[in-house]
Length: 441
Image (cartoon, rainbow, N blue to C red; front, side, top):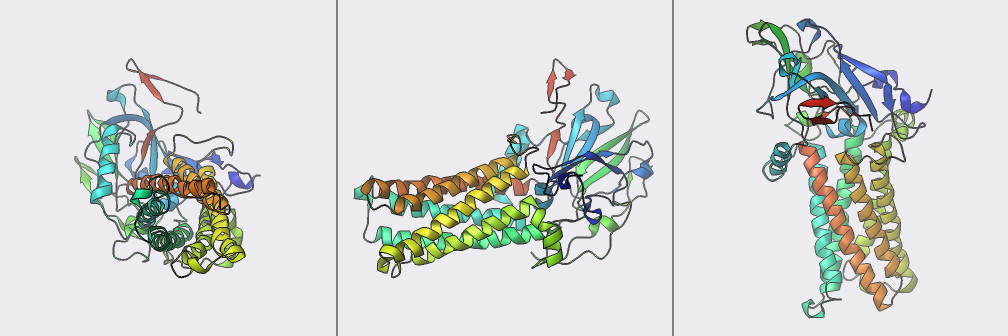
């Protein structure tokens, strides 16, 4: 059996939730020799409330206005790493017969606008996924400023001020490379502190309408066991609220079930360094971890060129020393960024050759890859001292920095949307009030 179609027993996601049934044939990934990157779950069919999770908590949605015939949970390695809990639903043909109600899809204009506004108002510094994105945003801003210092005087000589390229360009290069290095270290920490058990992250309430049971799903902090649930410190223990969620009475219907059918104990603390056993048996086969590792490798080598770009160092480099200490680290580091972006893209794909245009994480990887190409072309042109090559070198840093900026902003948006809601892939369109089945893409 291919490695991509099965999980190690202790790493099967959400196995502690008896009300969720994994659709095991759906476990897959883009490469058969690596770990699965996705697994679909269906809810256990039952009319009894004792088979359902009954937790309540803070809700990010005000309206539950989408009637659903069926609801499933989609686990992906990227979502799990980022602390996201994705559900998919099949719209109900008739609201009166709907078994569930769910928040409107997160791709709707209202939800997109709401989450975009959160980028300016919410600063969850305890969430490493948000912190990584926020750091890369500022790193990209610094590199855009650097590109203006280095490239703008070439097409617009009148804009140059004394020592703009050497001082302004050199100092911003060092700051930008350092910020990218810090963000890459946090990216690795995020990867090795993934939630091994998976996380449901939703509250379910049983309601009665015309004496018929009806289940309403809403985002819940109390049902989440990801590391970002701990708001007291960045590297604290995992939240255990979901295993001790209380009971509640809703619309006259009492329930006595906790969030998990099987409580979890002995959750590990924050991990700074994974064990060699974990690396050998799991992380070296984990596509997201490999992408983060390539990012860290590229950023670490690239930082050398950021250091040698400082005034007082760069001015004394010539010939082979300039190529070896300044340009070569950029080529190697930029290549690491390209590979990392490609791996992040592949992690979101069903097949290695099939782009996932509908997945936000794919676009983040794509723009990171474009940024890496720009940061690799810059030193490739820089090795040539011709005027046209100098111009193209600075220009590559300019558009490469903007590509990194796009990727970072998208990643910041992603980090704030912890409960994505989507239509099931085989139920895409609604026309003339009817649901039309389409083949799964």
